[in-house]
Image (cartoon, rainbow, N blue to C red; front, side):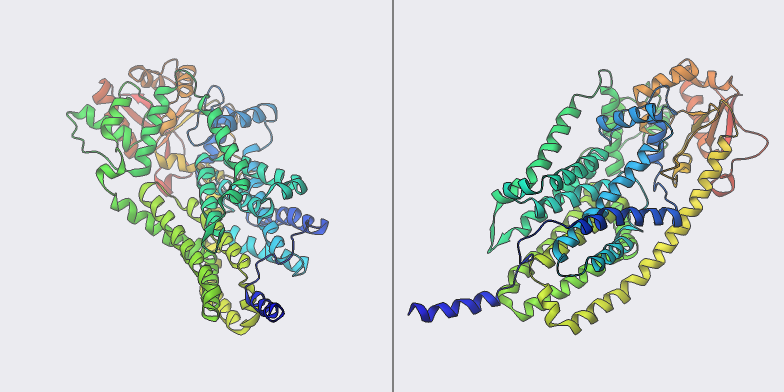
Length: 597
């Protein structure tokens, strides 16, 4: 009887979907390491040579100026979105090696980590099944389709999300237990370093990417509707330890006397995220102007009027207390639609293809395909729910969508390969080929059209930026004061490697956005003008010939009314002769000097 039953067990095993890798994973070969580590360098170099590179927003070049000590009397190190440890490290590097673009190079380093990790992931699943050079072409194609347009335009969010997220995913695959850790210590160190650098670069990005990948790994560990959480916890422990260690150490870095600034920055960040204003009725013109200064004009340096109590009174509380801001929700959904149908259309293409293969597998074998279909659909619903939650309850710019969509594609790829779906492709080659071709025909043309448009636009913005910076550097020993948001946006599209540099003794003063409230900025006002008391500040500035505002007529009118009604002082803004600023025709920005009326 026993002999009769034994043969029946083997066909059952043969029918079960083989899981990838079917063989025990072996170490990468030297040739594979060279491809993984050198090919991304070549791809980034070619991209920079052909297309240039640009900071996507004005935040990054503004950070660089502050860390170099150009915008403040001493290097500035109290940014809300970045760990103090990270900023202090940048400051030390700029002080000792000022000619090196440390910040820009670090962004490229994080992007290199992300592309290299993607290559390691492809070799993990396909090494030994496909030629190394075919996989190299796949890495180049992945860079072209998933990185070039969506991630190549630098800011401190995109590379941080990708470096942290890909490191967590790959670590869980390569280092699932203590035994493999002993064999792959160098690989583990490489991935942990990539995670640390990404997490230290952007706090929120590190949290978001880690949480997203951790949930995916839990979902991917389903086997027969059971979760092997203890086994899963091991590869996540190093990253949890890093997060907790950095968080605890950073909590002790808030310097005494900065509490007021930290609380104001928290309230302003809450307002910026939710844009949900409590009902506020100004009692007089002073209240009205202070309200405009705090939440509309971002003119925040005046600590005598923009106090913590005032910000608590006028800025939004918890979102659920006031309900959803539908205007902001509609704007965020439009941004996401543009992102997924334009910038990240390949992400949608791959998702449609993976869904098609999963349904095909389920149609072929409901017993084996059912759990896979459940996991796949649940993950798609989870990702959509995560994005919707972030859209509703947080400020979620496009620079968050695109790297998250890329991680989403990589997670779907792991589900696809790890569940044996490649066997379906072997059996239904014609159908899958037609499906893949159809997806490419639908999504790829729009992607390349958007890529060309982005490259053209950023190139144009870069030229405008360079013209503006060169024009400012034609001045000597001048203190520039950018006022409104448009004036700050002059710096976006700065080259990360060449950076933005103020020459000839020129410098910046923060008199707008929340950084103007920082103690370092107050020190700067005292160093530059002898006072940080606004009842005396403009009196001093109006007597100086080397102070130039970058502003427009509307903002000048606001400043004129602000000082007239709050301090009983009257000023006029005279355009600097003989020529207007290069951006004057585009957005009305010009150079002005303040004079008493």
